[in-house]
Length: 182
Image (cartoon, rainbow, N blue to C red; front, top):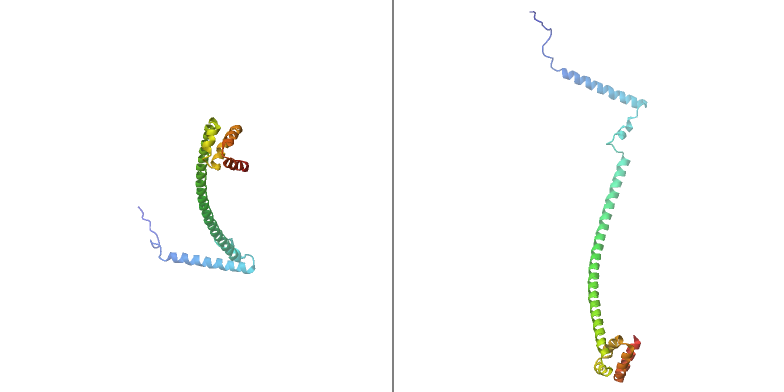
């Protein structure tokens, strides 16, 4: 068999990457010179190139963005202040509701007492209606005009008239005046 021999070194020469790096740098320099020439002749305007890049902002856009951020920060501060005012107002309203609930409970209790008192007066008037007018007058004379008036008001007019006729004149006149003032 025949042996094939190669002419030249078996290993590539060292420093070949240096040649490629030099070629690359030379191409970059030529492209830069070409770009400057095109810009100088007015064929291509590279001064607006950075504006076309998405990460580049013009000073006007930058100041507009800063202004928007400042406005948003002021709005946040205003909204936080409004929130604090509303929370304070809410707390005031809760306190007012609690006071009103207490007032409602007090009034309900008072209404119950008045209903019970009215029922007691109605019951007493029913008792006095069944009594003899003279006997009823004898008992009612020991009470004040303010106490007698509600009882007589619950009686029929003829029954109340009969009891008033049996009462002492001074008490009967006081009751009559109070009844007329109603």
